[in-house]
Amino acid sequence: MPNISVAVQPYTVRDQLQKDYSGTLRKIAGIGYKGIELGPPPTGMTIADQKSLLDELDLKVIGCHSSLEELESNSDSMVDYLEEVDAEKYAALSLDFDSKEDVFIKAAKLNEIGARLGQRGVQLLYHNHDWEFKKFDGISIWDILLQETDPSYVKMELDTYWVHRGGLDPIEYLGKLRNRCPLLHIKDVEAGEEAFFAEIGEGILNFNTIIQKAEEIGTKWLVVEQDMSRRDPLESLAISYRNLQLIQQDTVSH
Image (cartoon, rainbow, N blue to C red; front, side):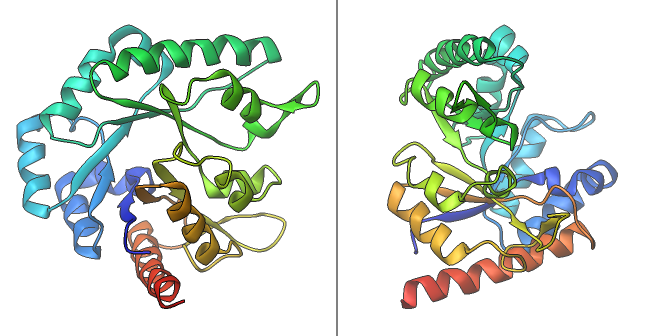
């Protein structure tokens, strides 16, 4: 399993970043993470300052999340940012859908945006939640998106937790995304009706198999995210990272 790097989605520590941006990034790097999905710095810090800090911490920006509106109106500014921080060029977004027709309309927009971003070397990713597994006329939003988007323009950033919350198997859905899921959001889930977020390896998802499948389909980064935590979110990130190292070692040994 040595080929997939480990990154973090800092939404996990959004409150800590607001209070101490540089200090929180230092703590993330101190845990051992090598990649981060990150956007432009907060007011008072230049992009050059941000890049200098990230370089010092050996923390690479692997892409950032955006919105349909921003990517339609001003995608160049986001691409300029990714270039300035020497990032791996992935741009991710999520959407809401209110009808089957709306899914087709937005799939076409994703193709348009993905083609435009591709001209500047950026790969568009679609990040799911659980609502994409709702069905219209017997077919899920997710399956319509896969069918109606061009794989060269639109790839996926599958989220293991939200697939599970949608009542489906993350391993099965990963298997349908060969060479189409370069970044995988990994989140665990507690047992029980609440299905609360859990640190990697502390919940009920089978991450040994998930990681094996991710490697098989060509995933490049495992991105740890935990939307909510029952403890200090930085402690949650440390637990997830530590458990992930053990899972990776176990996967290699077998």
